[in-house]
Image 1 (cartoon, rainbow, N blue to C red):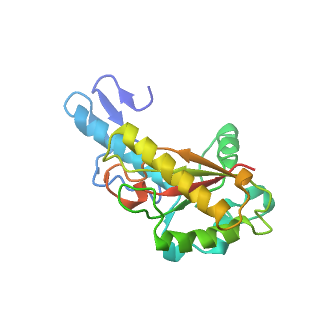
Image 2: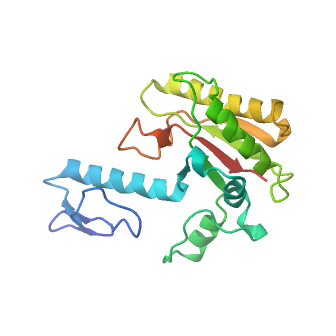
Length: 215
């Protein structure tokens, strides 16, 4: 096993990399014998940080513009600028191919009434911008998954139901009020299975709506 010294029972943790903080875990080597909990915490923290970086930032209402959404959702093959940061890496050709094939997506901080799928006035204004982007020339004809995400404070069943209802509410408003053809949108509830900030369960970015380009 890479990084494991059978004589000292030490596991070397890889550096988080540029832009990814280990959030207070400064040691590069953790003793499996003496600090198994510290090792687990370090691995979970690094994984959560890497996942958040891969997902990209969550756009707040003031940051959601037609241009930003089009750039984020247009597939890279159409010449659109990448919406996620690109850093040099030592990926193998197979890994690079997998990364290149990742779907385009945009994480939006869309608000709802507490414990409800009711859209707020701010969300309705945000969705007007989203509708314009989805009907732009670069995105015309493409289909999108609309994923609802919840924070983990409720039960898994409750979170899945609420996130599904919120995703459906967004799709209903985009198609029923703003003219986006319903056959281009697929509502999906994710519950609390994909938090962007696992260290802070109540973080706003864990309650979000993600648009994923399906082609």
